[in-house]
Length: 172
Image 1 (cartoon, rainbow, N blue to C red):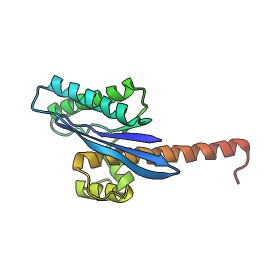
Image 2: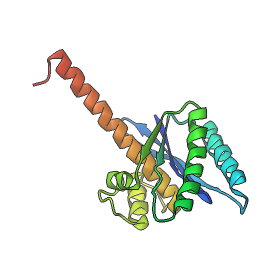
Image 3: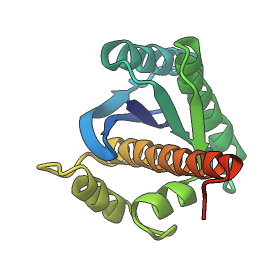
Image 4: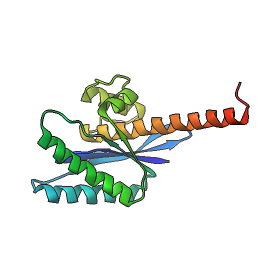
């Protein structure tokens, strides 16, 4: 099973794909979709087309994306939301179910600490996926998002098995 993680950005959108096989995570690919200094509609198109191409080339079965963090700058949040929407649209257009996670959820899942910095996330992504080098920040964040989603899928699968056992009356 393959999971595509997305770290949305209006200038750089990171992507990372992992594969889950027998409960183990394996690195497939990662990188960044970089926008030139174009107007926003052109950058949105670049994100949509770039994410669509990644999906077409790697055939993931799930997509996970970081939720927008709303800070003091509403304009930045709106632009980021549009970039995020372009990436989600590409996934949904290709039939992928989309999981959404806050930065806090992703960091807790990967590092064990919700306030971890970028270097800690990069280090843990490298360690979890047994990478030779440290991935670029945006790609590492995207891989972390995919790892977070894989943990959620695993948790949901365990819960489903427990529920089925209870319903069958075999759980002690």
